[in-house]
Length: 72
Image 1 (cartoon, rainbow, N blue to C red):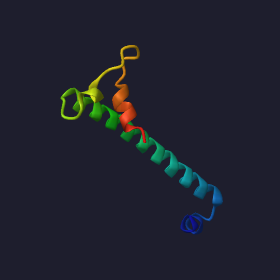
Image 2: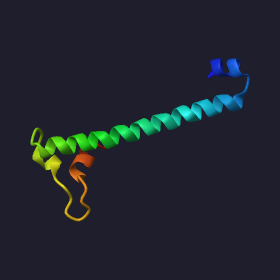
Image 3: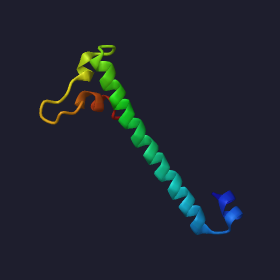
Image 4: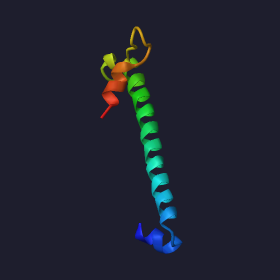
C-alpha cells in the first residue's frame, strides 16, 4: 500500500486499486464455487464419487447435495 502511495502520490488511487483487487478476489471465488459444484455434480452422476452428490432436488431442480458439499 505504501509503495502505491509513493508511486502515484494519491490516497484515492491506492484505495481504488485495493477495492479493485478485493472485487477481483470475490469474482474468482464465485467462479470457483460455481465450477466446483458442477464438477462434483457431474462426478456424482458418473458414480465416480457417491451418487447422492449427483442427484437433483425434486422441487427446485438444482444439484443441492453438490452445492452443499462445496460450501465452506
